[in-house]
Length: 399
Image (cartoon, rainbow, N blue to C red; front, top):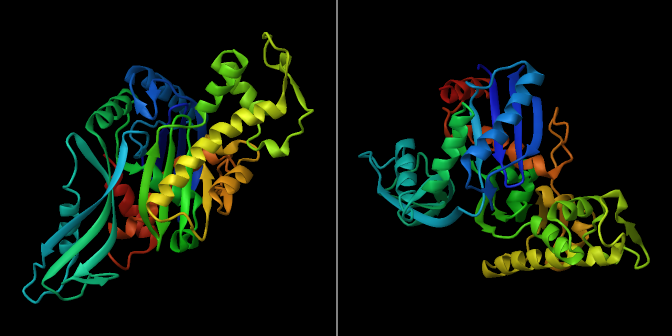
């Protein structure tokens, strides 16, 4: 449907969808919804039929409130979870023109070659060019320069082919198609980071339900990304073990009374659990609850710190930007500062029309659109206005 775009993030615990319209030379959000997800583990779809049903419930609700049919709307889809990986790769080509001038075709060829170094059963998602070399000399932008040999070093995001197969099944079941896949770390970062953040050096840290995703930026490039197999749901499991209760009840207690940093809680403060459910213990110490939460988050941040040390990026000038559902925990910023020893803030984006714009869990799905639009220059001819680029965007995206 003309001038509409659908952004979809199918997470382990929740599905986030944003429907946007391009009008008067800017995007407007028509609808943004978060609803429970089903059929996933650590971001990987393991029961496609359950996931289809969950996605259809979200889409039906959007169609009902907006009065629009979504079947032919172009879709941007996040690829996240434990099956997403990134690695450095290189490519080299001989410049094609006799006079040695480097063309856009040369850039396209060298990037394609850098994308071929994938492992078995892996499928390309995105490529981020990091450095170009012309005849062995580092250059910022090789287009139009002269030389005999062009090289590139890239950060390549790829995913297991089975992951993509199941994702395609889910979207086909919902009568949607993938128009563009975007790696979750890139999408999240484009929603929560400023250009200054990405230039000076920053860590984008997405705390999901069962995974935690890192993306390190410097000089406006994603240098490193990693998905850790632990997330905020593990806090709920820890609380359930501590209280000898069901995980669903532990999740409610975590959300309702949880605090990430025990230093901010009085040891005398108690919680009456009757407001949640009748269980064996009617009152608990809020300080002890905070200690349980803090212990798991300290473990997660400790793993993150080890990752940063391994790549020599433990001291980033712009610090850490937290997003994802786990980032909503009170006092999590103070705990992150203490463990990582870096300035920390919650990542938000006040995009007009996003009803839950202060909710860090919505940042990845919003970032899908922002990242794609910010990279239109790589697809469009020089000199196009923003409006012309968007018109071309919709022509390319429509099935």
